[in-house]
Structures are given as C-alpha cells and as structure tokens.
Image 1: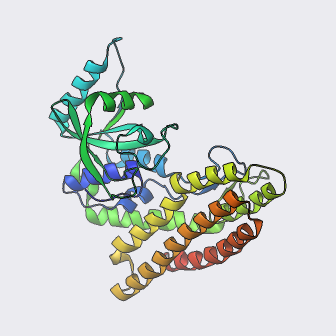
Image 2: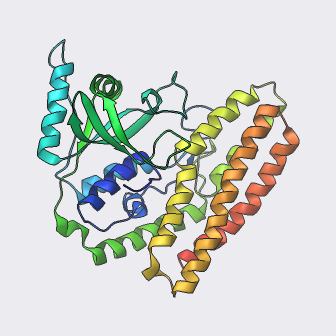
Image 3: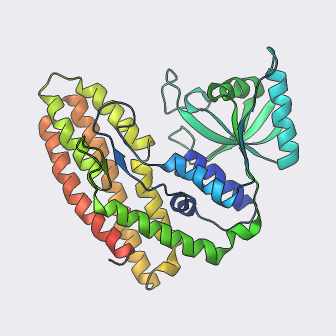
Length: 329
C-alpha cells in the first residue's frame, strides 16, 4: 500500500496496483479531469475547490464501467448484522471493498475534530473475530503515512451508516489499462487541463473564477475582513480547511506526482529531474503560504496577510512558468 494524495483516489490506485495494473495516482486524477480549480467568490461552503472527487467517478465510469458504486439499503430495523453479512460476502467474492465513512469518527483519528463529519474512503480487506481489517492510504493522523489495522465491526458499521452505507467494487477489463494507451491519454488530458488552468477565465460578473487566479482572488476578497469586524479566525480556519482538503493543496501534489512518473513525456532524464526539483520547492512554498495565511487570520495580522498576497502572486508566476514548460508552451 502506497501513501495517497486524496483518499478515494488512493483506494482506486491501490486496488489496481494490487491487481498488477500499472497506473499512477495522477493518471487517475487527470484522466478524470480533476484539475479544474474553482473560486465561488463567497466565504461559505465550496469557497475554493477542485473536482478531485468527481474525477474519481469519471475515471471509474470510463475505465471500469462494470463497477458497482452503490449504497447498501437497510431492510430491517435491526440491520447491523445484515450489513456485516453483506460486507463479509463481498470480501469473500472480491477480496476487498471500498467504503465511505467519516474520518473524524475513526478510532485512529488524531487530526480532525470529532464534532464534525468529514467524508473519507477506506478499503476493507478482511474480517476476523468481530473485527474488520482495513487499509487507509490517507489516514487522519500526523505520525503515519498509511494505516493498516483492524476496527471493531460495530464501530465500522455505525460509521459506515454516516454516508448511507456507500460502497464501491471495481470491475474492469484489463485491456482498458494498456500502458501505451493510458500514457497517451494522460498526457493529452493533463495538457488540456493545465492549458485551461493557465487561461484564468472569469466565468461571470459574480467573480466566479476558474484557473490560477482563484487563490489570488480569494485572498484579495478576504482583505476586507480585517477592517469589517468579521471573525477573521473563523473565516481563515474554514479557508485553511478547504485549501487543505477540498483539492487546492492536492492539485499541487498530483502535478508533482505526474512530473515524477511521466518520464517519457520529458526531453531527457536530467530535464525531468530539474522540473521535479523545481516543483518540489513550489509545493513546499504553497504549504508555507497557506500556513501563514492561517496565522494572519488567527492573529488578525493584516500586514502578514498582505505579505501572503504578494508572495502568492510571485509564487503563482513561478508555478505557471513551470506548468508552461511541462506542456511545452
């Protein structure tokens, strides 16, 4: 099991790798058109996000169309035993099953508040002595890259109910994953999405953006909260959560993964290594910028926040230069 970038993506990736199908996490992401950045121009839900979750569904529909993506329907009042039997039967038939639950309620959660439900996907791989065995390649912890262990069956089944007992069983033809075909389609999909990202379109007069301008516009719009008696701590906390979870941070890591894995798309190994190192620094700087943005909000420090805006503009220019190199523009 390899550490993932986004939970559902990593479940799909590790399933395929376990079946000796050569594919990369960023392949799944770009083939599903996940690199679509959005800024909605408000401080509510889905303020800034990518289509990383939808990308998984698009990928499965295209490359594994016979998959079963459904919800287990409870038929009895006392249905926990039925759910357990269902999962055990699926494990006997397919050896693994991907399920959706809340990461904040997982017993090994050390990262999120237990008061808020946060959608998360894990892979169930076995059952023994009233415990399910699971794999989690994006665990809500800070001290482990991956989690492999057991969960009490009742705890898992209760948690699974949080998202209506959603599950995914991948079913596919191996011919769909021929390496030459996948490589060509990934390059084409990635280039199209990066070109769209670099266009910086304004979608309407309501300041709905797509592309590289999203984060800059978000920060510029948020400048007013420091002078309008708005709860800067609360706004920044939500913004930090969305940047870390809803796809912005992950989008940088998927590009990084693509640079690392798509050697055949670069002029030579030295050039690939150069872009790899350059973008590695970009990822580190984005992490630091988000952290400083959060600190500015917590402390109500408008000077630090303005520094974040200027550094974001500089970093965006540098990142865009590398992205243009990747797509050869």
